[in-house]
Image (cartoon, rainbow over all chains, first blue to last red; front, side, top):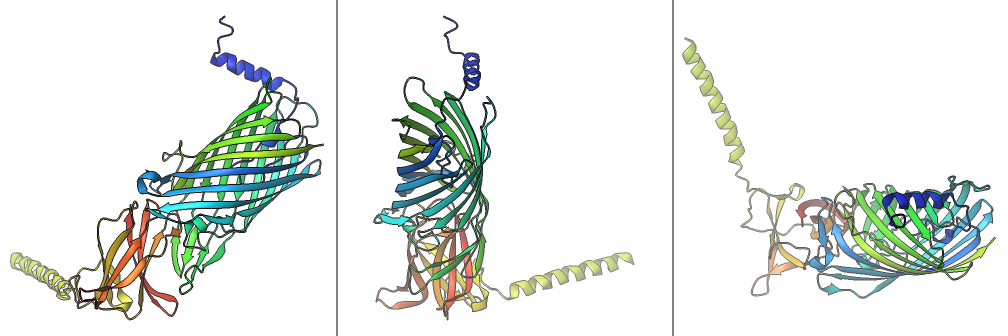
Length: 323
Length: 150
């Protein structure tokens, strides 16, 4: 009986045994996507992958630059977003892949009892090129696959510097080169991944023409955004389901802003996302992903500052073509 | 011998300090929290109620001559176009434009140098600047900011 009792040691032993098992199948479709700006990587045996997802975001908390947290409900500010995302990744060579992603949003905002109509707009067009610099050509219980990613975000929608209506701002507004490094290891039951991404939005000048009599010009330095995602997944033996957890701290540097000749500088922004992924594999080609992401749990000054924190739901259908 | 000399030095020092103080108080300029020196103006903000992020806010904006006026008046209209902008420095964004109009008395006459600023909406809690600007020919000529933390 005592052998069957789950203890911390037995869980660790089971984990160590599990990662020594030979690779049966890598459910790569679920890896390294959500939260990062780059298009999700194909880390398994796929030749191509197409994804369509519906996402919902509710902004719940504001964290000031002093780290003080305010529930938006108490401020009478309600903000939500529904988003449709289309994404496609394709293998060019065994070690090269490219990807493209585009999204459209519907945003709702209520400020101090002043409800605005829903606004619709495109987000950013994201392109990426992935290179597998660490391949898994022979069995190794420890050696991960490694990928380098070069990407770019091309803004298609309006940013907050181009409209007075925050609900209308569906894009960051900057042309943004991104650089990523991903390590991924999977075996029969477990997968583990580490992804770090650096975004370097370019300095840009925006023109807000909402008020035709008084158009406002704003020059914004992009700064740097760094995000690291650590994920741990488990694939069940008897049901075609994978369950994974992710933690993603994000840091955005201060930005210099010049509006109408007047200089100001933002503070550093920090937040941390926690996610749960549930992937249901219909067959080798089709899967359904359900993801819940929460930024509000880690809202103390250690994890979050100078930002709004949200909760996200996402439902995605994925179609894969294997090699 | 030394004692009168010492007293004389102390007396001269005291007189010097007093006279310097006299010069500084001679101007008798009213204290100005929001000066616009190029326009020789001072501005003041009087909130209808304490500013809050949970509802639209409103205030009265007054301008007076930096040298000869005070918060109690007389008020003078700026030569340039006055304007109020809300800006959140830490986040790098503003809020929607406020409603800005000249204040009127009970008879409906415009009160020179006094303005009503309404629909002051702070889109989130945190640090805000209320930028009082004087604009001319599409350019901000002068600006002063009142910083708030909500």
